[in-house]
Length: 347
Image: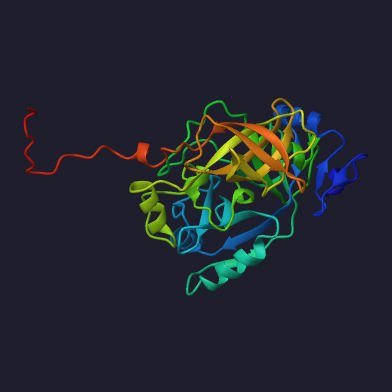
């Protein structure tokens, strides 16, 4: 079934066997805007049993206990300190809850879910099926997850404005039937560029310190009013009392340099490191772009320099703020005066 993608003349495969591109990643970016399919590096779990929704609701960040069949959402597994450990794309078909994960994430998540099952009526199974991502209106046959981004889910909040970002409109299908005929094909390099331009966070942007606030993930993956779960105290405290220590930014890179940054490359301001690149790609309209997680203190108007590659080639970068430094502070209701407090007249 995957031969429709990997056997295309000119296809260049990544280490995971998924096409990075099919000959022209820039042209494939334009195809994605019009409607195309991408073979994805994904793992799939299927949860069955009467408790699958209420049980997963109790241990992850999203309110999914009453998730209706066919409705898509996403949820996170956090550490006790509130750091992101796993990200799950979810869609239920009335009998099974389909969980789509970035590649190489299923073993660790399946182990943790199994350990957390206790007496819940839930069965966890791996599914060996290709996952095809797509834009447009022509879909493969199977269980389809419709990405909620950038819409703010019930119980969520967006820190950034969401304005001036590229189109997203993204779907992922676990192909359980015939593949069908794709309208066009694209590789993951074009998809990466499209995701970066849309400011869409994934587990690829996560390091061992990431909390969901930093990536604006409270918009689609966290319900701020649901019951307790591991890491909830950090989520509530940062949102209600503090501010995330870092913030996601979209970097527009100087195209005169031939070196494209990679994940982990340092972002600097006046010679001091202020963050790290999480993803970079060549966009068909915007040119070279990157996502970076920066210190909250990094000036929003500052011109930055990325030290790209093993040789630390300096690449100038203009930043587009996705999560503002005021995140948290600007999203709290105003304080009401205490009952019985007497307002003193001004002198």
